Image (cartoon, rainbow, N blue to C red; front, side, top):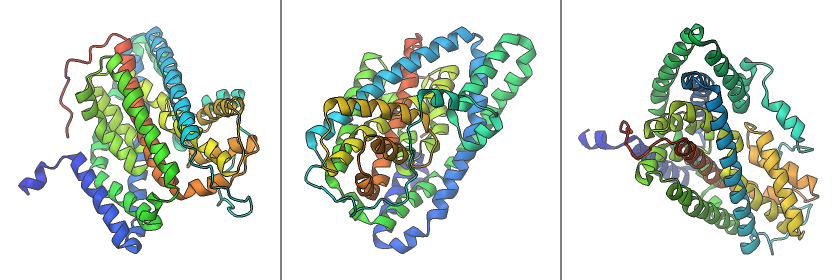
Length: 411
């Protein structure tokens, strides 16, 4: 019991992941039956998102006491998001053009009919994306998990609380209390993380076998290598330039990153990311605004993946795209990725709609589908890592000193 008691929460997640892989390999039929355990954990996580975001956003904005400050924070966050996602986009494009994983793997259109993937028949226009950003009902936005709509409502609601001053004090204090309750609720749910994570890994390996790690190995290696390069050289450079304490930052993000990687769900990592970045020293009003906004505007891993996967689909179809065509496709992907946030298997939805617009057959998607679960783990974890870093960057930009260690992060 003494040894077991010394194992950290992150350690238990690693142990569960290893056990899940072993179970998937040696008892695949048993592993497949663990789907309910994985789904229950994800449902519990999703039950946290709406009340936690509402409480932390409203309290953070109202507690800042200055709408102008929040506007400045928002402007800096959006500028940072666009710069970093553009770098990710070009890195993915460079990787797939250099390695050419789809060249020489040509398939005939009739030989690889894609399984039922929801297709966007036409990418949303800029007007439709803007319209979708604003909620008709906060209850509907909460029920559907529309994070961006929730951010917009809470920003206006928090600004209204700030504007009326003391009259809003009971609501602001209630939101502060609700946030604390939801963080405790999160801790209870996270006690189940090793079970949920282990089950998710077991189901993936049990259903597809270890062969899933070797299917389309060239594409898999290309995408993983590009994501690792992005994390080490791009995000690493940002950490150095902005003078963010690397050791404490790694300690703060390791658990959200692990949860995102193993469950392939950004939502699963959000509550822990919010809590840990605040403990890292980023002010509450910055964390509660930048982190959820980044879920729609700062999808570094997804952007890199989409740029590579779209060109891969063209390579598999034997279509040679000019650089101008590739750049136009990238601009389309950047817009559509912001327009369908929250859609299940969103990356495949975006990819299928965009390549259809450019006349590229869907056979490549049918091939990618075999390893999409493994690719999804990588891109989702990079999304979470990038968004955690964004909160620290904006905090430094606002003059916050992150070199002084706040309360220790529980491990």
